[in-house]
Image 1 (spheres, rainbow, N blue to C red):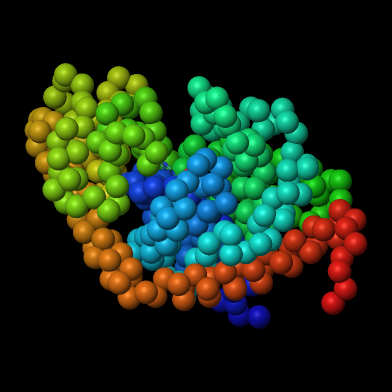
Image 2: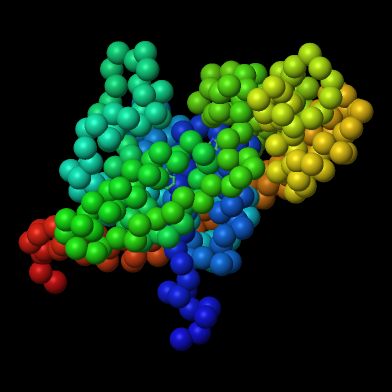
Amino acid sequence: MSGTNKSDKKRVLSGIQPSGQLTIGNYIGAMRHFVEMQDEYDCYFAVVDLHAVTVPQEPEALRENTEAVAALFVAAGIDPAKAAIFVQSHVPAHAQLGWLMTTLAYMGELERMTQYKDKAAGKVAVGAGLFTYPALMAADILLYNAHLVPVGDDQKQHLELTRDLAIRFNRRFGETFVVPEPSISEVGARIMSLDDATKKMSKSNPNPNSYISLLDPPDVVRKKISRAKTDPGREVVYDPANKPEISNLMTIYAQCAGVSLDEVQKRFEGQGYGAFKKELAEVVVSVLEPLQRTYHDIRQSGAIRDILRDGAQRAAAVAEVTLRQAKEAMGFLLPQG
Ligand code: TYM
């Protein structure tokens, strides 16, 4: 068998929720790693709409955001000929294995999830799906027997639960799933808010000045960066404990310009925050402009629906085999044929 045979490659799966505009945090923490991995691995990248509906969604916005995230995958450089790009709900095996994983997860485990605690905090009515969300995420990953899961730092705990569920299933019902490893980069795995460096940058933040959207026009990017909070000092020095705001901006610079944090520090020695922010804005714009051009071309071409149809077929071919194995191992009477 040739080394380039798809089945010889290790698998990668990751997902992004279509719950609003994607930010530069999603790009730096996740999407750019998807692009880097697509040559070496057999990749599956999902727009996880079933996860998005764990909080209320406007139907029209959900449809639009689902297509938009898929187009952003392509615009960011994911090649649909290499990686399967698909919508989670187009592959029914996700919901099915999600249920099986829900039966395997303990209440206590789910109660400990910090993302659930954050999202549920202060709410009177919390959907049950928000609580069982990590079991569905485990199913997403285990269906593909993914070895690696590129994510930002905030998904680490969900990945640990996925590993626990895979190990639990394999012990109880026999070796069925690959136990996946998270792939979290050292720099940029947690991009912080522009207005509050104690919070992660998030598309669900009601203040749009707190994040840079991948679809923000250049002038909006420049304005947001010039307004980004900094400390009263003026040295461009990487020191997350004492200078969290400038350290966060330096991380964004380093990731967008493809240089190390040391280099950023050297480049701006003695220059002050104003000069640094001006250049940072241009570096971010230089990443976003080509991405946005491709994004608008793809949306106009209508090609995304074909890409998603093909991606779902490729994903389902893998997922259905694993689901069948899992059901068989658990003792389900399988339909004939
Ligand atoms: P989501 O949609 O919130 O975010 C998508 C990816 O972007 C990363 N990310 C960040 N990275 C760095 N800095 C930030 N400020 C930042 N904000 C977001 C996230 O860590 C994530 O990798 N539960 C997942 C979606 C999911 C999934 C999966 C991921 C569902 N099934 C299976 C991997 C595998 C989520 O809510 O990501």
